[in-house]
Length: 395
Ligand code: PLP
Image (cartoon, rainbow, N blue to C red; front, side, top):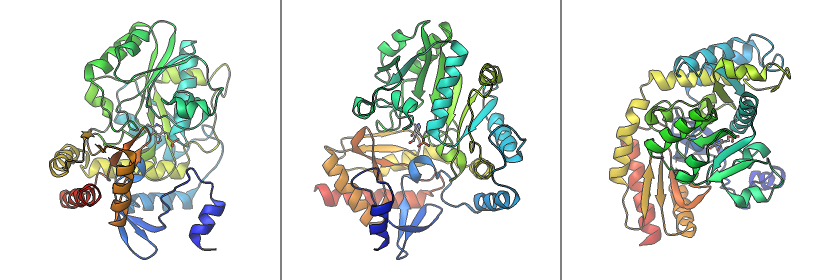
């Protein structure tokens, strides 16, 4: 059997039609297949590779930490320098109330931990979530996912979860003193990059404050410069009670985190003791990689280039078949008339050496989210290639 057959036979399949490119090396904004063909990565592993692939400083940090030690003991028992250093760096760049980091293995586990924390802090169970939101695939995270199609297949799920439209007045009205928490993506990813109105986010924050409900902001996809600021919430002038991070957090290694004030976080420490535990959460190699990646992101000044690159992208991508373009930073969604058209464009882009994809709740929209290190020249070139692909498919 060849690699493709072995992949289909022995690696569990998440869809009947995986992209199934066979990549043997990735560097910077490119991924290379077995024949040496270069593909420009326009999705960054869904906002993981914000500083590109296998950055030398990240590789060095991984190698150094792996040689020193890997796993020692379950999370939280020993003082492990990579966790301490990364938690310190993250909190240095966060508002004062986000001062305690609970590292997990993934984004979904960060969601789970945050919802448990909110229950303990408030003593309530009612959760407000949003249609077309994605927070992970575990059962708690699935319960707050914004699609009945996916939720229903796995019921029964968590009780007491209520979904509203993102940006709706009904969501604001629903927050009262029975609500435990509101879980919200600062910029909604899988609906096709939907940025909410500032006033709406402020109103949600204000209602949460008034009724002592916690605001959880999910920046697992939106964080680490993707939207043009290190954290997307900076643009909305609100601070969450709990922040969810993942994806780019690990610099390519598996890592998630929920971050809150120490006073809140302490509720997981007592009664019951060990209220939330994980074996591999905050793996030292992942923390070393993540810290190195964040340093590269900050020291390279990449975030300050994002808005300009966004404007460049918006000025170059144009075709009458695009019904609508939504963007927030280096993160865009091009809407076509149907999934069928979008799929053909995506397939042709891949043939032309551009990796792109659709959105979970917006299958008619093409995703563009390149590594933030992409140069203006490289970006201009891919925009023209995308235009050409759309022209070939739709004209
Ligand atoms: N939240 C958001 C906004 C995401 O995009 C994702 C993953 O795509 C998650 C949570 C879940 O993260 P993970 O796949 O690491 O569990």
